[in-house]
Length: 338
Image (cartoon, rainbow, N blue to C red):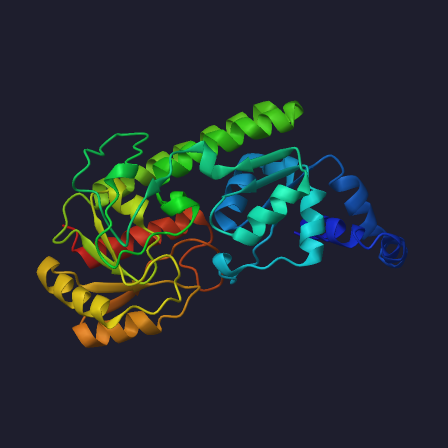
């Protein structure tokens, strides 16, 4: 880890120019050796937030040094970049981000002039999802790419995801779409660093295998349930709902901190009764106040469904795969899986 930390410090301090000479002279020899020798030939990768960082680390393996612009525990949608971070983006060899999630990052990357810049949104098909998204009406079994823009469900509170003309950016919560993105990232890393192409290919295949396994676990685990409806404070699970034939009822739209209207709360009361929903899900990075209030008013339980925008000590797992497995267990419990 120390090597990676050293690597992480270099691009930001380099911005300070002359200061860096002083720092290097003062730092212990071993530290500067690690920086010069150990990581010298690694690709400097900047990832916008955790779902991109996970892909870069897993596919890049030992050939990359990954820095994430979003620190653990920071709500990605709210991220503001420091001048140092903006400087470090332009010094990257490769940048991986997801356009539409973090406006500040989108702007900085556009201005950075980095040649190998990959927008994960271009590696799969984005869709529109309203606050209520159902998978019942689309014969979605086994479909790899289903761009039902015209099909978007705009019931519920009418909250669009607001970004990119209403396209929902939360593609990483669908293991099938995330695997498509992983394949694209693998190919782009092969191009950016042809010397290690064989390793990137191998790592991509291994990760895609794990994601396929995760998809199968969700398919079988959510096939027979007492209800198909779940209520969530953050409408991040549109792709997941569509993939597995569920209905997401968002209390509010994309903004996890948004306060729902009294009319929407009333509507959710009715939905919960009609659809036999048992649980209001909240997430780890945002306030659970709204979920708890709604649960108290409706006699529903609360639980965590993690939109996986960052990993912290509170996360139910150490990485993407583990937290997605925890999410599956929470959904099975809430939906009454048989």
